[in-house]
Amino acid sequence: MGMDPVESAARSSDVYVFYTDTGDVVGPFDPKKNEKYRFLANLESCTEPQDWPWSAIAIVETPDLHELRALADAALTGPSDPVDETAKPVKHGSKVLRSPPHFPNFGFARLRVDEYRASEVLYRIDGKTGYSGSAIVSGKFEILVEMGSEDAGEVCDLLMALANVPGVTDVKAARVTGELYYYRPRKRRVGRPEDEEG
Image (cartoon, rainbow, N blue to C red):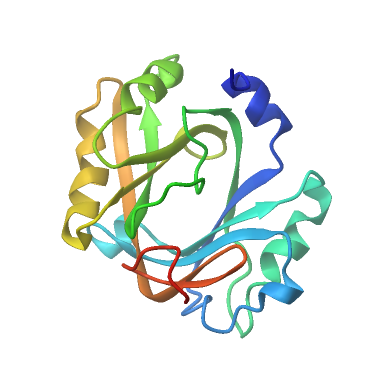
């Protein structure tokens, strides 16, 4: 039997990091110099760009939040803004974000939900077509969700459809874009099976 989702999140060293105005962060990213990164990707908004101002997302593994700023900024190689926002999981859904198996095309949604309904929404998301992982977070929103598909054209539709889940009041979503993303231990091609060489 698996670990309780609350206990799992409490023990998790994951921190979700959101960047704005970074340009391509994956191309110049050096995994050997950033061993605490499990995942890094460039993002493109599913709606109007101002609805999703973040140009990249990372999952950094650190139990020491005092070192997070330096770790998160390490992915930035040029004159870019520093990390803009972070969120920490406090309860996982049935799958942890960026845990196998994976869809070749995927993206993320930040959900705002009615007060006291986060656990209910987390439960309702589980099992939806394309569901790949979720977590209630401590941050400026309540839930982070990963959705995916074999078809790149379906990703944003799956993410935006989360607005129809009872209790959800706002959805901001983006798909992973660009040629490459990083998922430990190497860079991989967007839209290709993850077991292919990057």
